[in-house]
Amino acid sequence: MSVYKVLKKLGTFLAMISVVFLISCATKQSNVADDPWNKMDLIVKSIPEVNFSNKTYNVKDYGAVSDGITFNTAAFEKAIKACTENGGGKVIVPNGKYLTGPIHLENNVNLHLEDDAEILFSTNSKDYPIVHTSFEGTELMNYSPLIYAKNKTNVAITGKGTLNGQANNSNWWPWSGGKGYGWEKGNPSQNDPKNREVLVDMAEKNVPVAERIFGEGRYLRPNFIEFFECNTVLIKDIKVINAPFWILHPIKSNNIIIDGVTVNSHGPNNDGCDPEYSQNLIIKNCVFNTGDDCIAIKSGRDADGRRVAIPSKNIIVQNCKMIDGHGGVVIGSEISAGVNNVFVENCVMDSPNLDRAIRIKTNSKRGGIIENVYVRNLEVGTVKECVLKLNMFYNVYGSQTGNFIPVIRNVSLENVKVKEAGKYGVWAEGYKESPVENITLKNVVIEKADSIYLLKNIKNFNFIDTYINKKKIESIKN
Image (cartoon, rainbow, N blue to C red; front, top):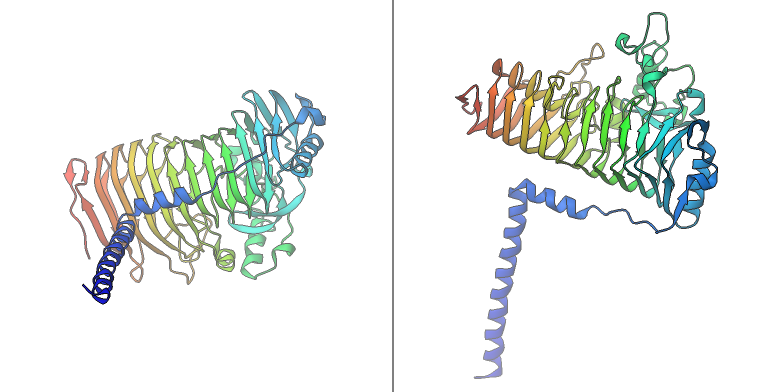
């Protein structure tokens, strides 16, 4: 056989191998596209983990006193500064009680609380400097969060100790204006016209954030733990109690792991975890017992959210327990930049004081595109209102209508068992021009609900092997 013929046959063979390889790659890509849970696995594998030097810096060596009375702000600051300037490591908080003002973290620092360590945060607002932060989805200059990191990389809070905001014994909770939280008529609160309303108006007028200066006399409470524009963060095993406001708040941050955290705080707006404008985030093995939503995924309020225009996406919730709260896993209502690729699996939700299991809330003032939300393997005991609520008419602050019609689509619940669902199994309300669409409930069993569902302006609701009150539910295509 000539050399030419040999090469020709070899070329044909290699071409066939290439075709097989390309088909194999295409099949793998198709499988990822067809099964969103494969995409979740890829997201998990893509998130880098923190990595610290084995050096340690004990806060007591920098002057900290664990008597619950001595003010330790300077000691924490010195220990953190020494740690970061020497290449990073672990700042150790030994057993005992430590009173302090806000703690500002730095690059390559792991703030580690020993098992019986408790950090008590000052309840004097004057101890909190003004920093670039956020209040209810609107950026501003306001009180520093109790623990704060801005533009940092490779940062952590770990250990089985306790972070105590002491907000139940301070002005923080009454500032909410809630009578159930200590506010009395005639006392100041965030609801006074010169406070929250002014901030929202500034954002609508596109006033630069640096000029939105609040703080003393404006009564807008600080977040508890805020990672602002950070990358590669770990929050692990800590306990958090008595928060002034939102509790775990990654904002404009990427590559976050929250693992084994216990949140027990029943104050006003005490959301357990509020990822905002954030991407590539895992929340796993946590317990949430809260005064508001257990987990609430955000992306900015109204004009401010549209200005920032960073959707929250690639957010994974695994093996968590939700007790009291307005919702187990919630998306909204500060949602103007949109949310996509949310995965929730293997969670337990159960309390007569838990209003809903899964909830999406927005309106025509917020707008936003919320899509690709996947939920599987939930055990739900009792919820007060419904299992799944998808609402484009959320209204809690007076008139909340505008020209930004939201979109809710591609939501799936699979393998969900529920004992008591409250008023409805499913509650979904959309607009005629923007129906709630492409919703699937597969292998969902709700043993008891006052009514099967409330559905308005919906499209392509698929009920597959789904039973509510022992009745098999038929799909609605519209």
